[in-house]
Amino acid sequence: MNYWLLKSEPDSFSIDDLAAATRQTAAWDGVRNFQARNMLRDSMKKGDQAFFYHSSCELPGIAGIVSVVKEGYPDKTADEEQRWFVVDVKLVRKFKHIIALEQLRVHQSKALRDLVVLRRGNRLSVTPVTKKDWLFVLSLE
DNA sequence: GCCAACGTTGGC
DNA sequence: GCCAACGTTGGC
Image (cartoon, rainbow, N blue to C red; front, top):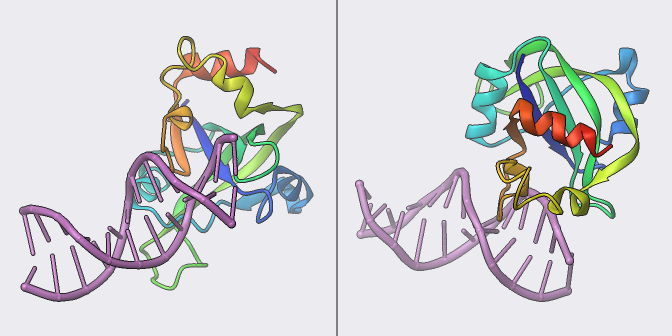
């Protein structure tokens, strides 16, 4: 099983929106970046888990966990068919408290030095997370 | 609102 | 294929 981190601006789609969706499942649509697209299309497999990250908001950080329930298929919200892809994700659980970016940064120079989302200038909305980092982040909950 | 970072576009 | 210009992201 692989682990990921998915970014979303809660103003457009938050973990609460996912919690309120039918079967707590939604297509992760709107990704318009080739690198991220490739991961959605080729690498994310059914059963993989991902952190749901809230960006560009009052309290940036990880809000909970989702799992991939349907593998890559074309993004219906895209103008160009077949060019952009989505996966379906289902809510596993919402954290009681957001694991804040600020809290993650405390460990940036040691335990979480490989966590892509902490890297300077990082803008990728889909990034892989190692099992080691996954477990460490969960220990911060 | 600012601005650094970076992906994409398009002229050459 | 280079690279400047431009648009977007996202933390602060």
